[in-house]
Image 1 (cartoon, rainbow, N blue to C red):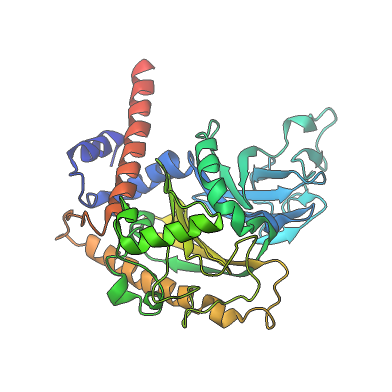
Image 2 (image 1 turned 90 degrees about the vertical axis):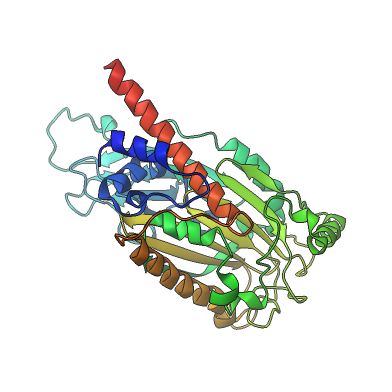
Length: 406
């Protein structure tokens, strides 16, 4: 499918309805998604605590691009394409590691932690090493989270950082550690994964474990109109915690209570971790829920945080990475039990995988046609789909203008 056909599909689609079939199935649109979305937006890479010491690094695959994030000898967080400047081999394979220098396993080209090329064996006299450092990427830190952008001119990160920082700061993710991390491969287009995460229309019947504590039905546009939430927000403001909704084109965050007097998202509603995160004044604070398109949604509670990253692998395959964060001084077996910490979300992830794959199987059918979203229960899905369609249309229009100028 060429770009003109994609532009026509976007113009012809019905707002408030799911996308036309090719957006979930077509390899050419998948390639466009990588270029228009994942290579232009800010992508959640990981946590500052994962690279706390000089030389520590983490890796992530953003579409077809391996990415390397590290802390250099001066404590500066840097990001690079994880690609050797010799013949393009991937340099670091491990998800996490520590190194004094970065050595390509193929031909032993060696890079400093600043990305500068330090050694290139058997290259000729006069070889200009300074021209062949690793290609840097834009990187930003926010309250212990790290985002990268593959774009030469990435979107302004400041609105997101300024809006979210007051909400996130009390949770002290800079002083948190990853207690558990796992990947789940879902045989579904990345947009179906994101859509599924943006609504709880399905939660009551599909997520038995989560619904022991999770508030699923509320007014997305004005949650303060619900008495339960109004009273909860007033109580949190008295504790000094901000409660207003923060909204941007690609992000949204709000605090919401749990149900039935629960203090955490666990099977029995009691805290999973005895040591609270950051400076939060109580476990009885519900959760800060926030999303950043296109790659991550999160929940920060009084006792732990869970961050769920969704990245595309193929037109009908995505990888979902879940990180569980606890206070860095919390000790497994003393301050928390790993099973209690993770069991609700791991069950929920497995259930969501089955739902996404069921959705993909139906979308692949010759009988599929876009259906209407529920304005009451799928407002978050509508918001994401409109953002996606707008970003894709802008990218294609800019390309058409460039082509006409040439």
